[in-house]
Image (cartoon, rainbow, N blue to C red; front, side, top):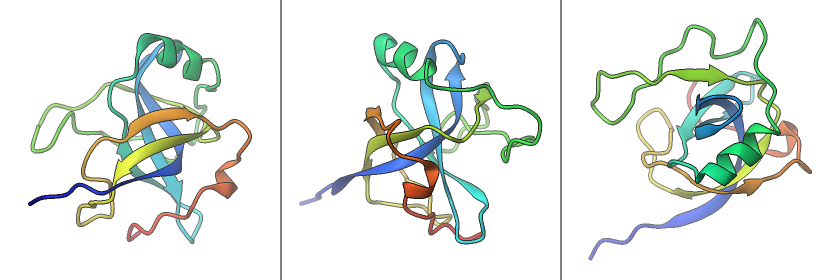
Length: 132
């Protein structure tokens, strides 16, 4: 038998697909021990109401975003890239994740949105264990 183990955890929103007024998916990250903001994965598609709600909590990124110049794949093994809008990495969200990770320490499967955690700061989120 095959079992999928899931846990809930917090992550920081670093970018969105869709727009900053109606997010479709969230690109998530965590800071590592050296203070670098590491990409950890993205969410499944949000319901429209959730996308609008979370978008109201986001601030578009200014110059110097940690992911400036990055491209994100649309899917496993895909050459298609996502059109993303970077945001200030300050909103914490609770997500459900499969504990499986790839060789880079990223979540292998999309995270499931649970809720925004505006009561937490990025410093409250567990550190990334992804190699720098």
